[in-house]
Amino acid sequence: MGANNQRKLGRDSAHRKALLRNQASFLLWYGRIETTLHKAKEVRSYAEKIITLAVNSYTDVTKVKKQKVNVKGNKVTVDVVNDGPKRLNARRLIMSKVYDLQELQHPKEKKAAFKARTRSINHPLVEKIFNEYAPRYAKRKEETGQGGGYTRIIKLGRRQGDNAEIAILELV
Image 1 (cartoon, helix red, strand yellow):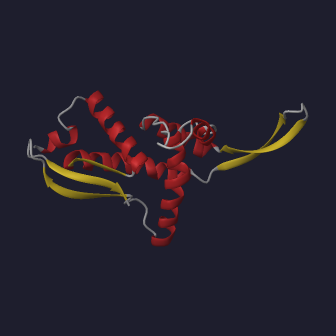
Image 2: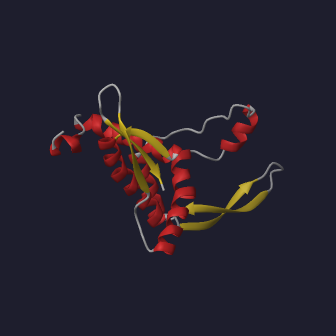
Image 3: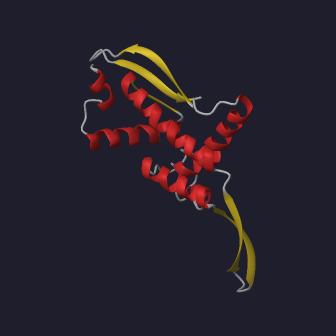
């Protein structure tokens, strides 16, 4: 494969963008994917930029007091945590770069329990990026002084059918 072909992955631009978006979404959702080596190298760059966006802005939140009417009809003041401008911008950018994967019901989980668990979550993948990955990698950045390097590629050898190099791309 030539140098130009490697970056383009043998696809037109719309197909390539969809492929990167899809694989990055599944990488961020499951933590690891198995794909060809060239795709893994491209998805690594794409996914690390998404994580960096979240790491740089996940602490930008504002607390607001809102008036709500409770069940009895009384007005109650409730503290609500909203995204600050930096985090809101990052959230919107991330939502444009990944597919909105939905939470799945566990095999032995009741439907009511599933609905209760997922009631307040509109975009599960974006929430996972901000609430799970961003704090973890920000802590790692403080401890080691190293930003980036959130993924690793493990080569598996060649695929039987077409002799393509296969690799596992996983979050560190």
